[in-house]
Figure 1: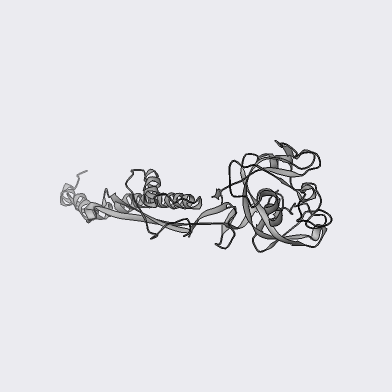
Figure 2: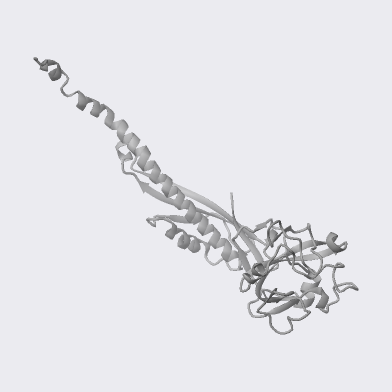
Length: 319
C-alpha cells in the first residue's frame, strides 16, 4: 500500500503554530495557578502577623504598660512571615492603656514567577487587624462561685492586684463580716454557689444581670473533685455581686464584675479540699490565693467597655 506523504508534508509545523498561539494563555493560567496562590499564602501569613502584633500590643496595654507599640508590632509580625519580608505599622494614633483599641497593618511584596511574562513583576499585599481590651462584661466562670462586693472589701480591704499578698476568702457562714443577715448568709440557704451550665461545672453570666444560687454548702451536683483540682496554680475569673434576693433555689445574685484570682488552695466539703493552709479547714469553707492582674485571651469572656476594673482584662480581635 502506497502512503500519501504529501498530505503529511503540508501539515508540517502545525504543532509549532498551535504552541505559539497557546503559550501566552498557558503562561497566564500558570500565573493564576502559581502566582495567585503564592499571593494568597502571603496574605494569610500577613494576617497572622497582624493578628499577633495587635494582640501583643493589646496584652501589654491591658497590663498597664504599652511599651513601644511600633517596636512590638514589628517584633511580633516578622516571625509570622516565612521570608521575614513584612512591614508592620500601628495605625492607631495614640496607643495607651486607656484607649482600649489598637489597629496594626502589615505589608509585604511578592515577586512573581510567571506573571512577569504578562507584565506583572511583583505585587504588594497587606492585611489589617484590630484588637480591643477592657474589663470583662460577660464570662464563663470556670468554677461556680461568687462573692459579694461587701465581702470582697471586708476580707481584702479592696485588694489591689498582687502576686505576694495571699488571701483566704471565706464563705459567708464563717467569714465573720457584717455583710450578711441573721443566717450568716447573703441569702437564706445561699453559700455563694451558682447553678451550673448543663453537663459542666461552669457558669455563664453577664454584669448587670442576675445569676441563680445553687443552695446549700455542698458543691453543685454537676461538678467533681477534678474540676476544682485542675485550677490550683491557675488564674480564674470570680464573679462579684453587689445585690441579692429571694431564698433557696430561687435566690439570685446581681453581678457587679469579675475579679482575677490565682488559686493556691481550697477547702469545701468531703473530697473537695486541695493544698489548703492555716484555718482553711474543718467547717470553714474557703478558697486561697491571690487577686492578680490577668489577661484573658481564651474567648471565655467578652468585653464591652463598661465593666469595673477588678484585675481581669479581656483582649480579643474584632472583625
